[in-house]
Image (cartoon, rainbow, N blue to C red; front, side):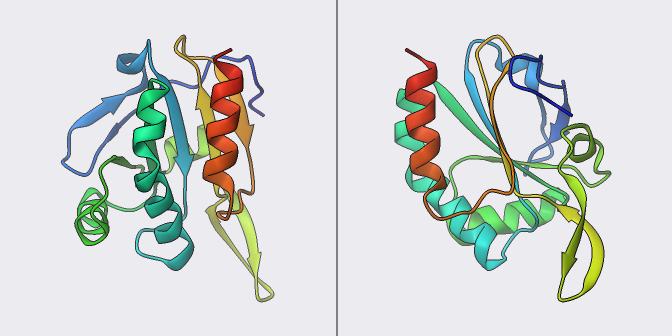
Length: 155
């Protein structure tokens, strides 16, 4: 189980343009790494749009937002185009990073069990260490909570 203070697990994943994005290349920036279940679903769309409208606030705090789901790069591109998103979505089709961050979980819905993404957010500091972990994220109010926490962490 990952904990605050640990080095964030390293990864390289393709973005919506099939360009590989690696955590090691983001040293010096704060990273808001959020994991979500599926493109173009109601909760995930609300969350992505909330992040998008708050991008200027995160950029002022030297933070980059990265969304990760098991969807394909093509699905991410359609999602970005449809919602006019201005941040990077990473594709983890093989679910390796999802597993490493322990967000690929057995979920129960309507009495049925299946594997899926636990909506989670990790704040990673400029040195690549986990500064904060949010699990079982509720979309409503999450962005405000993240902004406040990022400001506190940077004091």
